[in-house]
Length: 257
Length: 314
Image (cartoon, rainbow over all chains, first blue to last red; front, side, top):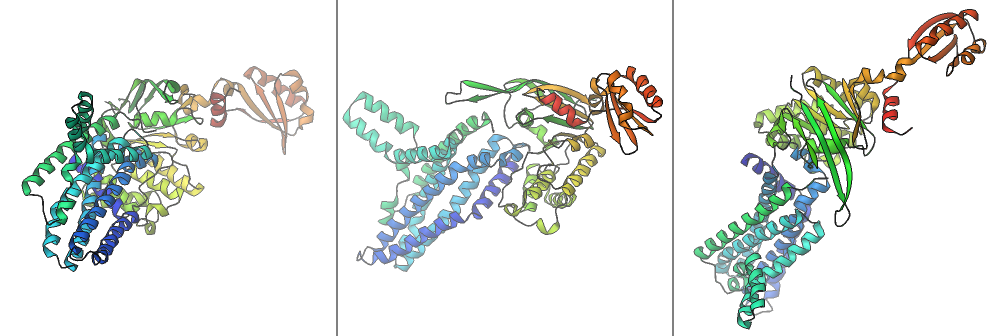
């Protein structure tokens, strides 16, 4: 079982490594970070904050872009190109395939985030903020964990929907995920039972991505504690496991025409 | 000996339309047995249900009804796939991989050790006639025929007991077809069972022990190839060759025997009649015209004729 998952994950990673589009995206983020260094000159005394804000935000946005567009095509491309035919004629379960593809993309994201994080760190060193260069890595970890959730959502939608619709739905979930906690607080404040029920439902069903928001604090030199990171890691693990389990249940019933 | 493939009442409906209420029956109550150690031809026109059947057997789509077993195991048992090989029609592979990488990847999925994967990959790529210089090229640079060869090679990575080939000759040139035909014949010699669909009837005729013919999702003929070809019409048709006589001198034959056809040949004439009771009359007429009978042969219909008869209304 694990042998197949590992083989599929390695092959997914190899596919990403040989895909020039991903390189272009990473290079683009590094360029933005480089531009932030020069932009920082305009914000006297706040160069490090500007570089951190722009660098980490670009990392998150482009990471989400990669997660959504690679995530929704992970399964659909294999069905469309019929590469799945030869895979499932081997002793490979559909669950193994989904988990393998997911882990392969997570490994790709990990490498991308590490490269982009290194770029931001180097830019911070350049503007003379060695302490921020080190402290951003907790936030970089949170960004990576958030991307693994976005990827799991993208794979879930693509297991039963078209790539375009899956991308749109995943993007909406990402947006809602960032506001679900605020919306719940708002509904609680309003006191309306219907609003509380609706936003409570959204809060508990959608991923609560406000847990992963740390870019602004990181720019102030703060770093998430090990306990906080551990809690978010556990939340991510549970949420992703549920999402993948639903994906596998759906995908097991799908006819690969 | 147990059948390698056992299909009972297999049906498949495809749902159409936005609400998926309209159903199209692609396969209708198929029963089929494939005994071990033979090459089994699976024939039918476009949309007859061949690929649907193969996809159900490979677990790619699910049947609407009926059951199917491979090597005694239900098709839902993924583990049975470790004993089978499959090459789909117009195979598609990860085009960023090299041929050797693809073979290695598939070898991993069968749990083969690294050293064995390398050896098996190289042996098979050579066996399907892929030149060594192409082994390390990315598959995106491969022609259709080269991909077909890789497709057949990958179907043998695990030394399978059953090999399922969907249109294995597709995209191959005549030399390639001959090579793959020999390879398939070699699989039978090695005790493997081959289940293949093909539109190239000459290959089926040359290779297959048994065939099944599908039409609109229904089995219309099945059995040993020579028995099917020696059908009722074929048994009753005879061709009588004669020399020393011209076709014009045998005009009395079509007048006396309904359906008889006399054809002029360089050395004489050829007469085709239906029914062995008419042979005596033909021989007498040839003698009367001063000719000599060279041969009397039953006419066996070709697979093409059988295929056309079973798969069309005409």
